[in-house]
Image (cartoon, rainbow, N blue to C red):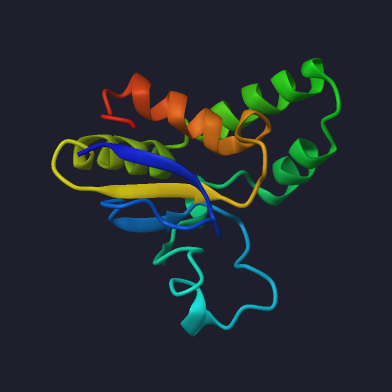
Length: 128
């Protein structure tokens, strides 16, 4: 049962399963009780989001070099034991459970979720 990497707020795919928000902040202007109803997320896992300083760096990245610098720093954050254990757990769960991970960014190629996809694949996760 593969992990889907999604954009939060977009309609859910059939069989997507639990949707996990890997973002630093909840959606603005949306009551907490409506996060799942509006296809944002069922549970929030901010520990897989970039730190606040790194998030700002990603949003400001305009060149490939700036994006690559962000990617290196994000990967370094994900090596922290608590975060690495979460990635290992999600990779293992991908073999038995359907779920999705997501962020708000429009372009996955300039979003930490593309890096999450790579980090999970490196751990043997089943990805869609």
